[in-house]
Image (cartoon, rainbow, N blue to C red):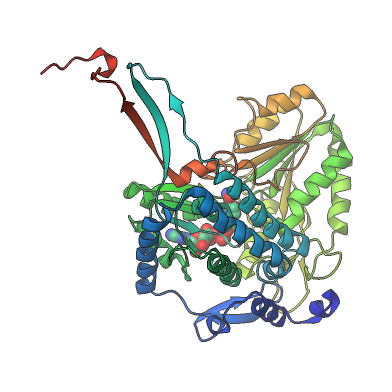
Length: 509
Ligand code: NAD
């Protein structure tokens, strides 16, 4: 079937064909009460059955059992499973990317990009499987050696959000598998089909590997209750939870209550500062992608632009033109850059935020309803000139709204940028070395991600990803994020024949 013929299919028929190609058992797609819909037109694609509490219990017990075997498999051999998963993802990239488009509403380039990100983290994790390393540390005692050993920690519970329905699982799972940990996944109830498809691909990889214990990867389908079961279970030492700050506020304390480890990846309120020395052409493209891409539904979406007064009017005129020209519609159609919001609640939140911004003195450009098909919730991205950083600007609205604020001085812009509860992603556009370095310094951006001359969104997997303050403090993906999926043992070995005690303590019996 050609791309054009496929675009003419209803999103539901399109999705069903893709699910069949991806090897999802049709029996899992009918008969239940949980409706899977496409945001493209709001129509039903499938009806899924929720995981029962007894099945969740069995999945957790199965993961605990699988852990006993998997932790003993040499790490490079565990890496071979992730290499096979990467191969399956490469082979299925077109179809899985299309399913992301049909279920999360992303344009194809972004749907495919999300699958590429899964492939990238698999490659990273395979390399990591031969590099899980500890330190050897100087000791004060003669004939002693001190070292750190990293061991598998146990089952990892992964709770994910709708907006990166497949990549976030892989950021966690690829690392967890090579670190020796089973994974229990609770995906967003809005994106269950992509989760079923990823699970089918994992199962293929596991069969090819041949030595994967049953229960190494499992899927819990349901709402917050089933997630809470995972969050409260002591057999799951690590909970990685991605979603809203409201969710993290509930999950964080519950995991802490049982002394579990929480990796929290929560809401952002990302900013860019545009200085007069910047390459304005480059900045325009960077800002447009960061603010309008994924219909404003990335955790790193640019939401606040601090625009220097000396270039304010001219740049706002250019931004308005870019906003007016961007094509909103069925993401499968050529040329469309902005697809639908995930559902009617998201659209209502966007409309309400624009109302609140108007009430706080903002001037709104765009934001209109666009009729595309069925019950799809399409909105033109909105640019909102704000006189000040009002409450609504300090709040994350998960929609394509860019608030523009004027500044005259970099210190003032950095202070305003940091004066929000969230701390995920930030950037500065400047060709002035001093501005760039000040922004990156200890007195600069307080975010987990701080960029120069690129927007705040579009991270690559080699770096650790996450943010501070109400974004939760967790780190995933590259750098040394793997350490969160392992337990550290400090070992001191005495190879002498006396027993000197540390700090000169004597204890002669
Ligand atoms: P959400 O908080 O509504 O849901 C996220 C997940 O948490 C879902 O699977 C949901 O079922 C589950 N959940 C909710 N309450 C729970 C509870 N009490 N116990 C256990 N599980 C619970 O988020 P969403 O609307 O799907 O996603 C959008 C949000 O996610 C935005 O705020 C966005 O910024 C954030 N996000 C953050 C990152 C990051 O890396 N920082 C990445 C993607 C999305």
